[in-house]
Amino acid sequence: MKLPSRAAALVAPSLIACLTAASGMPAAQAADARALPSVDMEATVKAAQIDPRRSDDALTPGAKASVLLVERALRDRHLLDAKWVDGYFGSTTIAAFAKYQKSLGFTGLAANGLPGKASLTRLGAGRFTLTRTIGPGARVSVGGGVIDTRTRSMLAEAKRLLGRDLVLLQGSYNRGGDPTSAGTHDGGGVVDISVKGMTPATRTAVVRALRGVGFAAWVRSPDQAEWPWHVHAAAINDTDLSSQAQHQIGDYYLGLNGLAGRGPDDGPRVTIRTWEEYRRR
Image (cartoon, rainbow, N blue to C red):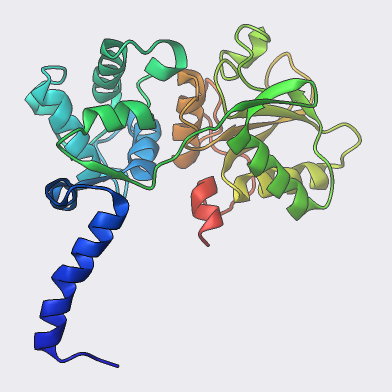
């Protein structure tokens, strides 16, 4: 039943008061939270991977408003010059954010310049709230390697789509474990997958499935470097990514192959999406 407008006007404040009381949040605090602008964490993290790799000043679609809020907060903490408050999460903003993370006492991957939930929440206190929050989850052992639970879920879905198992050659958090990886496996979200016994068509199908669920993925061959045939995959928007893996993902969005020479992407064309975007389809 639709209430008359006058009755609705009387009911709405009472309903809000009841909901506020149920949440345990003081009415004034709830009103303040509603008044704050919001930062889309997914879009912000995506921009922080893509923008530093651009050769132009194009902005990552859907990220400008959120990045501006983050940059203004960094500016007001005297960590970022006002001229860089432009909605472009480039290398200067990455460096400023890393400096902020370190000021909080964070180290290692938690101070990699990629906005994590904890650091973004602290930065936004009294200034903005977070929407579409993301995180890598706990570290787990899989197939003799270590990955995070977000990556594990992504791999499980790729396996389901393929109808076959995927064997890991190398997991994540493997600092210095493989000199040929150039640091990409030092953080989270990155795996190498065996292609032993696979035909070229099957290798391509594996890459397509991995890309479909949110990885930047490529078939790697011995012609490219001193490594065996394998599939290399980096989980887009994993906030534990090493800086090298962040660069690979930025290049993937820009149509490149993720190698040092920044050649054209040689993998199957799919709609580029994050794991969260895939799940919302």
